[in-house]
Image 1: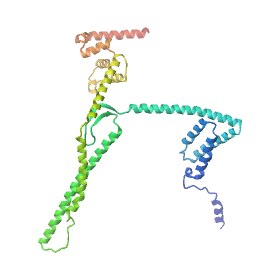
Image 2 (image 1 turned 90 degrees about the vertical axis):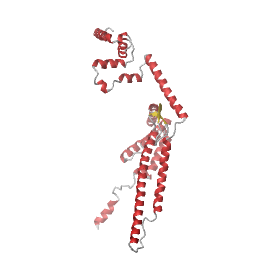
Image 3 (image 1 turned 120 degrees about the horizontal axis):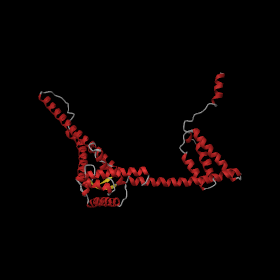
Image 4 (image 1 turned 135 degrees about the vertical axis):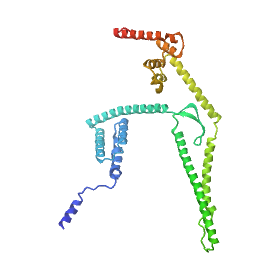
Length: 357
């Protein structure tokens, strides 16, 4: 009897684990929203402080850890007490409120610039990946109508084609299955008819009726499904036989003309001495691997010189020798070019050694 009384006395001291998370309890939500959050905004020393407090609550609104949430709530309550004391004339609290407002202003300006940088960077990345016409043709098929060929093709177009490919494959499997099922039904019906006729010929009286007696009733649902699949196949055929519209052809031709004009301007800028991204890519390129393995060190050096922008001096001689232009590029002058190259290298070494350039 005594043990039961002790258990009753200590049962109220046991820790009760709630069945729902703390952030769904009204005992947490109501004071946090109506007393703490609204009290901070009401007693904040300025607009910058209000912005910082909103950002604070927005940042930690998804906390689910009770210890961490308790720590953040204690910080907010201490800040609320300081704001109230500052309104009541406490000098220390007033200095704290002014410092908080000043720091909030700096943080707000910094955050505004960070958002501007992030927005501009996102725009640059978007423009870098934006689809643009290449001047090519995306021929019509079962899965797409005539389209212009695009670099960085939109994901919507890619997924449309992918889904249609998979859907057509599923329809083909279903169509073959229907054909097989129709053949099986005909065979079963024919077998049952012959079986009943044989039983009647042998004189066996029976009230048995064939299970597949009504062949039309069995085939009609299959024919309806087959008709719907055939309509989808006809739509695919119509899509594959569609033609390019005159407006689309004109857009593709405009894209091709723009590509040629851009490349022409690019070459003119290179001739003026500008080093572009296309120039650097071309200089970093090399011959194909199966050609590179058979080239000597001299051939590799000449190939690298050939891809340079400069068109004078030794580079011009090498380029003329490769393409057979000019007197210095002829076969009989290759030895002279090698001797000049050796002299140029020695001259550069002497300049480096003496420090006179």
